Amino acid sequence: MIDQTPLDQARRLNSPPLQGRGRGWGLSAGRLDQLKGFAREMRHEPTEPEKRLWARLSRSQIGGHKFRRQSVIGPFIVDFLCPQKALIVEVDGDTHVAGSDVARDQALQQQGYQVIRIANQDVMRNIEGVCAAILGALDQAPDRWASPHPNPSPEGEGLFQINEKTSDQ
Image (tube, rainbow, N blue to C red; front, side):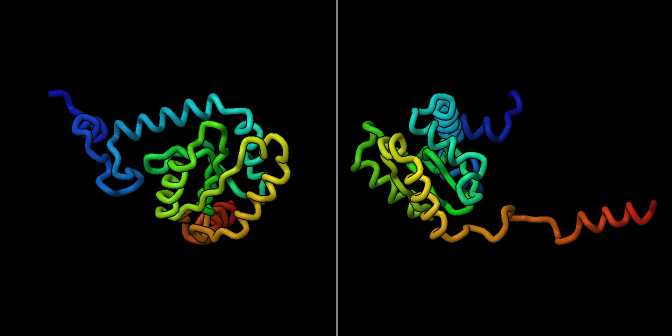
């Protein structure tokens, strides 16, 4: 038998790849790969309102907050996510169904995310107002963690090594 990686074994068994650890979300490895593929396609083919909003959200332009687009969270793909604030921004067009959106939003809220929905028309006609609303939501949302990295290096560790090198010269 050919040696299989743990990911290959999880695909074969259709079982959750991380058994509740990390970002497995309780989904099979195959389903996670499928969702990631869908998200990648959506990043390559955004709608016009998504393009316009991403032009404002990218490069930390709104209050210095970083955003990701088309992120996989559990069984969902969200339009825009600020991980530091656990804020999701959804751009709604004609294809969104209100009933399923409510259930989806509740599931995301149970995981600790705040969801704000913005209509396509608002993005196209009033991008400044949309950005102001997003900034207001960001300012009200608490930080999920104190520092950008959950395991930062000990304070001054890098500085200490640099000082040793310069004193040796």
